[in-house]
Length: 91
Image (cartoon, rainbow, N blue to C red; front, side, top):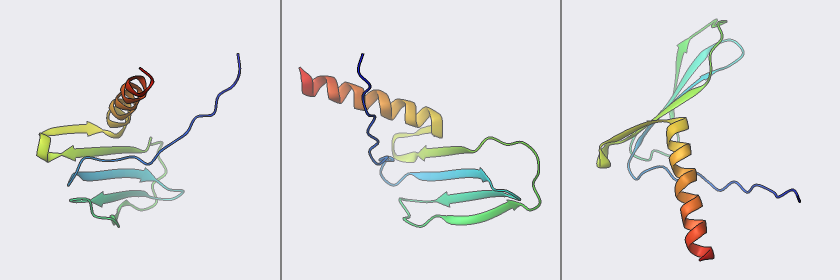
């Protein structure tokens, strides 16, 4: 079986959605918030001198369609939609 390259395309979030990413840096816990497709998110220090284990996480609020996702849920759904589109193109 031959190895195939995986191509990553840009992620398209729902129109006018709100995004929240929570990320651990070397010394702190940071929040990045974007409302209504804001291009530059607002950066908020949630905790300084943060030294506990933490898995980065994100949340998407698609208020127009009344749906909320974790980042992983959204990426999974987006991936499934891309697979379906690819199947339709190849049919």
